Amino acid sequence: MPSLLLPPVRLGRWVENFGARHGGTVLRVVEGALGGEAVDGSTFTVRLPFAAAYDGPAEVTALVAAVEPPRAWGVLLVRKGGFAVARIESGAVVEHKIGQRHVQGRTKAGGQSQQRFARRRDNQARQAYEAAADHAARILAGVPVGVVGGDRPAVEEVLADRRLAGLDVVEPWLPVPDPKRAVLDQAVLDAASLAIEVVNA
Image 1 (cartoon, rainbow, N blue to C red):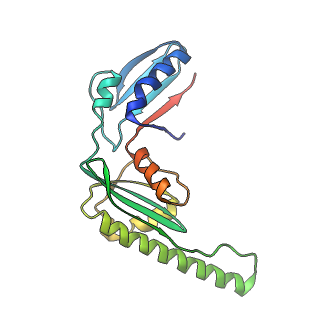
Image 2 (spheres, rainbow, N blue to C red):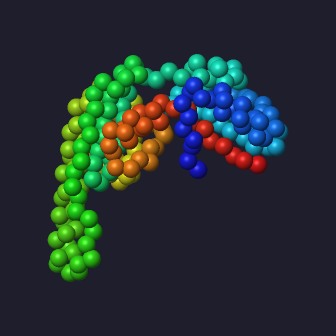
Image 3 (cartoon, helix red, strand yellow):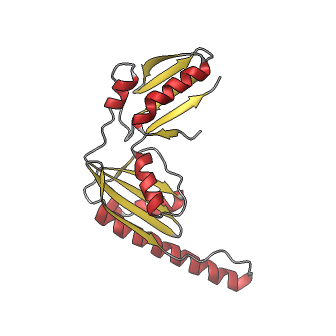
């Protein structure tokens, strides 16, 4: 079940609304996260971004205060026809690159014609992944932590580049459409958001 990604400043209101819907909530700290259990048996779990563990008091304000992004981190989004990569330092995007590459769509032709289209499509995709890896290696040089998203096989292809071996990829996975600037901006916000899992009774 995908997590709800919520900016830290909105957590207080969210927890209040959850309690109002489900009859009040008791908070506790469980396995590095803030958990809540409502009167009706519904529960939620709030996890800090960047795979950080929470071990403070069972309070919303304390959890929000514990949100501390790394000094430098990155976002990498890859789909078959494009990519976006950003370097974030002290909360601001200091460098980014968005690239679009044409990748041949599938064809209904058969036989040799279909094989020729498939080879061309594979070559175009490989060139797109190589371009994404080149820019990612440059922009994310020395960045210890990254959040990624897009098309999983495409992302894995780019991350296989040995120049990105030092990048520690953490949750959440970002299921984004073709990367454009607005998509990248939202991805940066989502990457630094709290991840909430809800189980309704």
